[in-house]
Length: 102
Image (cartoon, rainbow, N blue to C red; front, side):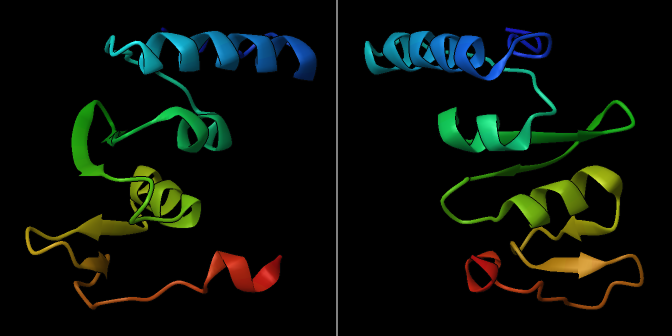
């Protein structure tokens, strides 16, 4: 599904996400293409992050934060083969805990 909630309101988006969840819960695979990071984190088992037409990472929404995924999308961070996040200069980095701001 390519941006299935892009032009929808909150109620309609919720209905679409519920439908996607029901399909997924029946064991059917779902490919969701979206820039709506909260929707992606709500639905996905794994996230393929693309930048400039290339896949730059495959991550679990249980192991990575939305801030980390957005940083991978923008190129501010990259994911090393060992799973470590590094900045553009290759230095390991830690982003603030998103839960600390809630």
